[in-house]
Length: 116
Picture (cartoon, one colour):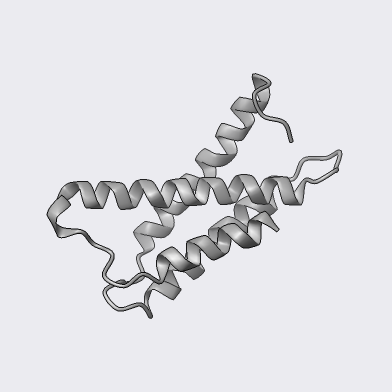
C-alpha cells in the first residue's frame, strides 16, 4: 500500500505545470535534481520491502527494475504536462536515486539501524 501511495505522490508532483522557480536560479535546478534522487530512493526502499516481505531469499532485481520503469513512465507523463518535458537524463538521475536507496538500506541494515 505504501508503494501505491508513494507512486501517487510522485505522479502528483510530476503533474505540477511550470515547476521552475526562476528566482532561485541554479538552486532551483539543484533542488529539483535532489528531489528526483530522494523520491526514487524512497520508492526503491518501499519496493524492496514489498517484494521481500517474509521471504528468505532477498530479491534486488524487481525493486530496482520496477523503480526504473516507473522513473521512465514518470518522464513520459511529464511530456504531457505544460512547462515540463521528458528527459533521459532525469531517468538516469532517478536510477542513481534507486541505487542509492538500495545501498543506503543495505548499509543501515549492516549496522543494525534498519530492519526489513
